[in-house]
Length: 262
Figure (spheres, rainbow, N blue to C red):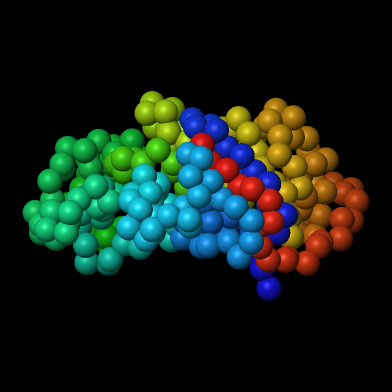
């Protein structure tokens, strides 16, 4: 069974977009498709007017080097030093030997320290990953996104292990970093208030399909209550109310309309 179907979405260079929706809506699948990590079984995906899956394998790998996908649980080896974990965000720009050398003698330590400082983690530069808290590990994963030389940043649920204050700081840092270098930022979020407060545009998914695609200022409480009608426990208490029941649609597979990232 497919996770998304009938999705038509276009994101322009430099936009910052939040993707929201209840659990199982297809948010992570959409992000992985944009990152060329999943190949759609139908439809078309364009990145900079190029269809990745029509390219030779080596060119697809080169294209992936211009993207950065930050998963919800960053793959951080427990015995690795934080400086090495952060600089792994630049591996796409390194050759094989440079990548291996970086594991033992990390270069660009100042770059890693600056990225960590933006998440209040500069003092953890040489700490081992397994000595960090869950929230600290998540922020290390986000610092990795900051050092990546990518024009498209795809960040999956970056706030799941963060308290409200850290969450606000993390969103502001991600958006600020993207705008500084003119990068596109697409982030999946469960925290709808963070999406409305920090992002210009919100795309809502339910049952593998887009429910609405709107400016954040135009997203009303009623729209959110309807979106989460089958999952009220995922909506903050101040947004709950007498929401009309909206039957969920079964998740269906495939992308049968163009999905474009410019």
